[in-house]
Image (tube, rainbow, N blue to C red; front, side):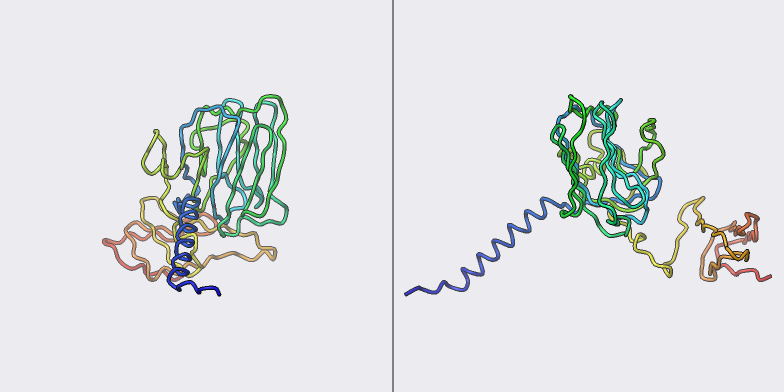
Amino acid sequence: MHRKRPTFLTDMGLLMFLAVTASLLGYCQTDEKVSFYGASYIHLPVQEAKGATDISFRFRTHLADAMLLLAAGKTDYCLIKLEAGRLKVHINLGAGENEMASARGLTLNDLSWHEVNLTRREANISLQIDVIHTTRSQLPGRFFELNIHYGVFIGGQGDFNELFLGHTDYLRGCMADIIYNGAKVIEYARSRKGQSEATAVTWGCSPEFDATKSTEVSFVEDGAFVAIPRPIPRSGSRYIPKVPLSAVMYTPPFIIVAPNGTVENVIKPSRTQPYQPHHR
């Protein structure tokens, strides 16, 4: 005859299992986030030569083309970027560039969070996206150390400019849990550890990346502006953007520029007040 276990012991075991699981998940994802605005970047000074590379991070963006991470040396490099919505890895250990890419049809610029894990052991390299999409490759050459002299750049290359970069667009979006060979990049950047730099970023994922067409816009700095791309109409009709400004508070001077580039209205009031549009 089997004795029935007390219910509280069963519940205790379940609680312990959940606690351990939560702890492991917390270890894997620190939930440290950073926002990039199209001219932002993080630089982590690193000088190393290693036969193994471990890179992991999460990101979300609407841009089809954007730089995510660059580990740069004099001739060696590892560049991870979005190209036409696909994730691509360009890596050179001195014997020529090798390229890896995510699967065709896998859309990564949909503003959803995507997880990236890049693992290299000498010539063997694997790229994993969202845990389930894995690509593997083997690098050419006889020497398999990745020699890094100029450090790791996140979101943009800052003042670093080498021919192998070509044209790279800065990231506009969020990244999280960035780990480069064991170094927690966001933690280093926030604390300025190891002379790391964080330029024009904010900590956390900004709510503006979830903005809708009805979301209000604030102009918080001198020189702040909104640029509305002008489409090319097929019918030859004139394009006139409609911007409701009746509730906007502004400080003089306030300038509206017409689609053809000419100054349409220049209002110079004596104090901050709601804008009243001029009708023509």
